[in-house]
Amino acid sequence: MRIPGIREEVVEKLRFMFEPNSVAVVGASRDPGKIGYQCLRNLVEGGYGGRIYPINPNADEIMGLKCFPSLSEVPGEVDLALIVVPARIAKSAIEDCVRKGVKAVAMITAGFSEIGKKEEEDEIVRICRENGIPLLGPNIVGISNSWKKCNASFCQSLPYAGRTAFISQSGALAIALIGWTWLYRVGLSSMASIGNKADVDFSELILYFGERDEHTNCIAMYIEGLDAGPEFIEACRRVSPKKPLVALKAGKSERGVAAAASHTGSLAGAPLIYSAAFKQCGVIEVSSLIELFDSALALSLQPPMLGDFPLIITNGGGAGVVATDAAERYGIPISDSPPDLAKSLRKYMPEFGSAKNPVDLTGMGTADKYEGAIREALAHPGVDGLAVLYCHTAITSPMKVAEAIYGPYSELKNNKPIVAAFIGGSECEEAASWLKERGVPAFPSPERAMRALSALRAYGRIRRRFGG
Ligand code: COA
Image (cartoon, rainbow, N blue to C red; front, side, top):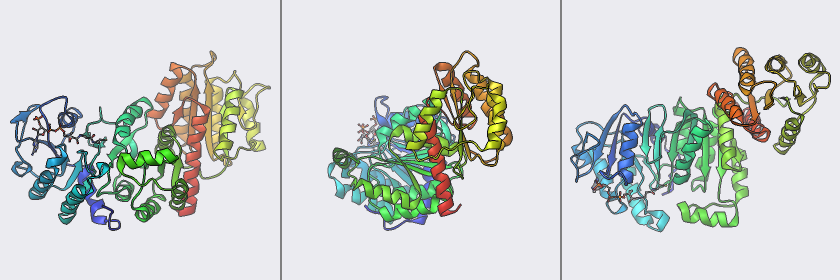
């Protein structure tokens, strides 16, 4: 049911959804093969510190926790009810939530508007709205909050902890991407699967994460379609000067539009309209899942690039050329180093190196050469951002180069973004992970590093345009 405008009171109550002090799993099952069992297990084994109440009229105890036949019989307050009973009894579960005075509901249960059962869905939404209970879903995978260790979902684990809030219109994708958060060290503060978005909408989640959640400094979204366009635009306009928003709009092709309609019942709409709307309200649009993650990683770790002079430092001419091509593709201007900078950079390369841009330290680029060049670049007032590329050679180890990046970055902290690319095998991957854990986004290819830098530049431009 379309939201009747942004509801500030709902935004406020989302704290009960994402930072609950108690969670009831309605439909907690004794059977490990069922979603209701896995949700309970995730809360218990994920290390959630609040109270957990399994609700199941057919069980006395699950995983050592006392089971309650209904919510009304729970002795304490319930902040979040996670609904995992079949659709046919979902309405009575919601009525039980009302009786109990539950503060927020996340409904995993499928079988509503996505299969044409709109009336049943509307009825549940009506009850929730009349009683001031925000409802997320139905047809979701759940929610998680890494800082609270609250995994109220049937994802395989909590995400790798970090500062990006991920809002996904696809639950299955959210599940799969939790694996990526660990693999690529893209830290999430919270994950919200939004499913049919029958009640709580994108706009309210954006405002919650943007204005009320201090653990979040970047919001990443997977969007198939929006029902409440003006509210989305209003929320993004409010948040974009404070925190970066990055979105992947899926369902852009002709068949993709049809697929989105049958997946979440979304009106995918004309792709160009979405792109124009994103521009209007300060959302950085990306065109693939990997770009979404890479951009979120950079935006959550680094400051925006406020000017238009990024410097590329490399030990491989080819990597520099690839990065330059990528820069052009992403609209990042690349121009020669200012003469005074070029002169000081010359100290860190042999005669046959290049101090232009890309700065080529050549294959003789040892860790100390990298460190010297990075220091010069960061200290120079004309440099607005840095991309450091490293091709694995026998001359120096990837970890030494990672340390050479981290040293000046952590000492100078002068608000200039840095991204890195480590091109090579497992040692490169280790060095990149080490850097990411310390706040420097690092990627396996120059193109991905430049794409991430372009997101930081885009956010710099948004900040200039919208303030903040
Ligand atoms: N209150 C609480 N629990 C109740 C109950 C009630 N009124 N009535 C029954 N239960 C218990 C059942 O006894 C069962 O526990 P048990 O296994 O220990 O007996 C548990 O609730 C689950 O009920 P069950 O009928 O077995 O449901 P299910 O596990 O087969 O399916 C859903 C429930 C919600 C998982 C299913 O309907 C569904 O929607 N699946 C799709 C979810 C999905 O994909 N979402 C989108 C993700 S992208």
